[in-house]
Image 1 (tube, one colour):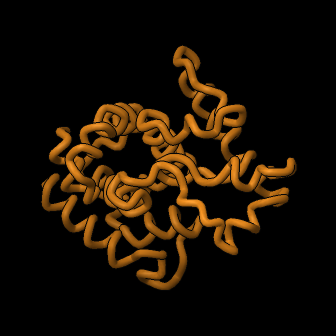
Image 2 (cartoon, rainbow, N blue to C red):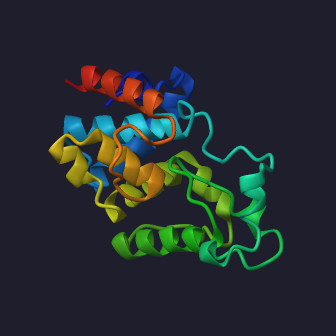
Length: 191
């Protein structure tokens, strides 16, 4: 897969696609994102979530929603400043102290021979292209999104990424139109 292909599937500028291609190739290989359907759904969603591979760290306002990250026990944000420190990092925006530690632990377990940084100690490392791509592929595996790709259910795939589960309504994921446009582009490129 070339930077040009990644660019066309994610809506990224070629320089951003070039920087992210090695990590995406590795992540897709390690997590069996290996069919055109799986690749199209994965790349379209990371393209949307990152604004074309532009934002591997959540844009911080802080917005009212982001202010609520602070002190959220469900995110593991129990220490002062955790809300901003553990804002979203990676291609699918891992958010919260707990989730940064969890992705570290899953990657270390799955790849015991690979050096994996401590994303709880150094959360910003999760925004480096290699780790951003691996964390996204790990999330896809953890949520079993491949079943939606294999069934051709793009809505279910998007819902699971955006809402944490498949919903009854079609096209209710945030940014649905953009996700769908990127998916159609990716399908054409990867056909």
